[in-house]
Length: 145
Image (cartoon, rainbow, N blue to C red; front, side, top):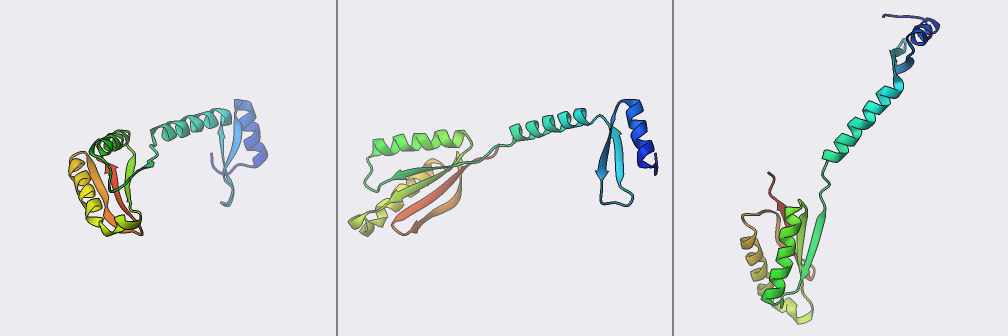
């Protein structure tokens, strides 16, 4: 409509049964729009809900094991890892060493190699197994579809 005095724009909005909404207050002269503000807010809220619904939050789940873990116990833990990956979560696998177990790092390394081999087709290794203090960490992520 071009540059219109505020009172005239307000009268136009009232005649049409709409609202006068200031869009850009910093520009010179300020830019206003005649529209149904409650309908606009409703549409914005619907758009926001839809975007939040489609947005997936990635969580990191952690599985802790020991180097002397039994095979059956390890299988149970790795089934949990499979479930977490299927849900789209990342999984951090931690092997904790205590006391004299620190002398037998090869046990932890062999367990990690077995885990890497098991999940080679179903997961992405986001962080290779590495030692930090008295624990070894491996980070697995789901394969993107």
